[in-house]
Amino acid sequence: MNNSPLQLKRYFVTELSLTANKEFDPKMEVKVGMDNLIVAPALLADTSDPRQWQVTLRIQQQSGHEANAPYFCTLEIVGFFRLQDDYPEEKIEWMVQTNATSVLYSAAREILRGVMAQGPYLPVLLPTVSFYGPNPKASATPPVEGEATTTK
Image (cartoon, rainbow, N blue to C red; front, side):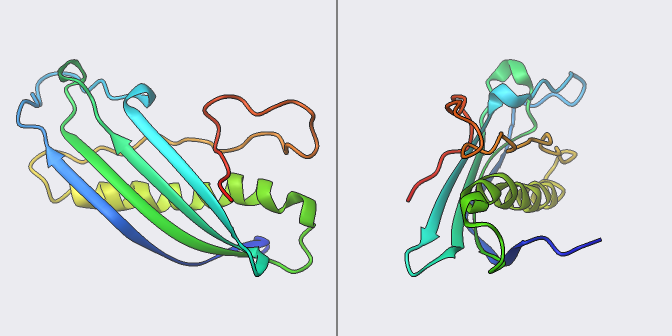
């Protein structure tokens, strides 16, 4: 096992909202899927050091009555990352877009699960997602709509 060239230095939650759905019926199937989940990453490179990044990830789950969701939630988490000095410069943005967002999403899933576990219904574990996409520098293909975007 090796250290990742991308290291999380710190993270914190800037917004957290959880509402128990009073219309939830535990006897019915929960039909919450990816179409009920909005995941919006924002990437910001440090202007004084392009190997340091701030990544914000906003997750919002809003479902209609037909989904029978036990909870509605919003979470925004901010992380600060640093890439090793010897990591290739042309791959930095792709690494942050792919891996930093994945690290924050994993933390966010656990935070939400923990908060839901204190509620009146069983907790929901958000689905596993992938922020992986081909390295745009290595491919001339434009990114697919809905993939993580970069804000500088």
